[in-house]
Image 1 (cartoon, rainbow, N blue to C red):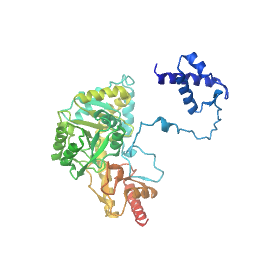
Image 2: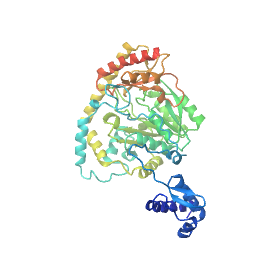
Image 3: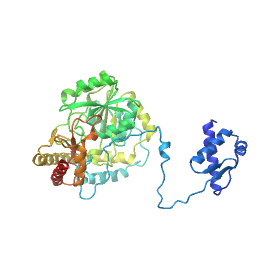
Image 4: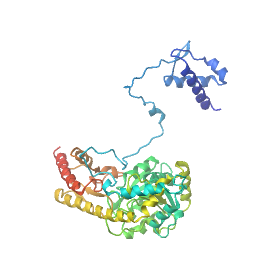
Length: 470
């Protein structure tokens, strides 16, 4: 047995003995313990030192080691977790400014932040009915296959294009956990990962948590720039690109048709994976939605990530990764280590939901609602805040990306907006490196009613005036 293992074993034995003794009782001497347990004097010394550091014992030179006084803790005493700073040393974790669910907003605050639908836009009746039917399915509470239910894998494969088969699909528990898994699977800690600038904050958080270094690649009106992407691969030696080619968060950009092939070719030439975050495929505003990049990729360069969460409900944590080649085997192996499988009742409910006419009706209605809300927000801003410039009127997604005029700082405006009763997202958290200008992300899907968006803009006007005069 190693010295460290012997110390741990002796500490456990002594803790058991201390529990039976009263404060001030003397513990066996070092000589007694070495003879009784067959350990070295060094092991005994280390065990006593650890227990002394924990406040379990006190050592009196020349006398011995005694059970320490036990301080009575009252119900009002705050717990002392300061010891964890030492125990966690070397396990640094930087979640960044992830874009997940936030605390509930105070009453009266208009929600123009976050990335989920207001309950009035969700298919809640269809979800409830699907879950009830799923619970009655034979074997609904049995263990699910590690890769996911066959019907659900077929549904995701069909949505990705004819070149994708069910065998290329791994069902996941939503998108964010899958993104974290992909970053761990595709790059070693310390490696660079190329990302659009700006990009989804949750991706930056997941990359950093996996020990990766996000490297910014600029965008323009047509999406990520292939020329600068090639330069970034050459300079950094990166073997991983994360991008959102369809209804990009936060800008709403759709990667131009001519660039879609270029971007895949650049990644392939670099011997790199391209993670395609296709979260917004069902969030279009009525126009045509391009096929995913994975649909035209036969060589395994593109690994697609998609989800039912955004168009349905935050709690429908069902997504999929589409991949080909050894990387899929690696992901399946990680599934066995991480969580074995995704809860079967939730998978069954997803199959029930998307297999009914109610799902198609919901998507058509959602498209109309999102287009109308986007128009209300953009129109009200044009009247009330004409010097705030939307980078575009998006054709899909949940947000408007707005450049602020000179003299306004985004975090100050976001703080002032919250004080005036409207929640928005400051732009700084969307950039992996230096921020080129002050921006806000304004959501139009989280508020209860389109009229709230107009009121939210009015409150933003007040917040801007407060910042200008501060």
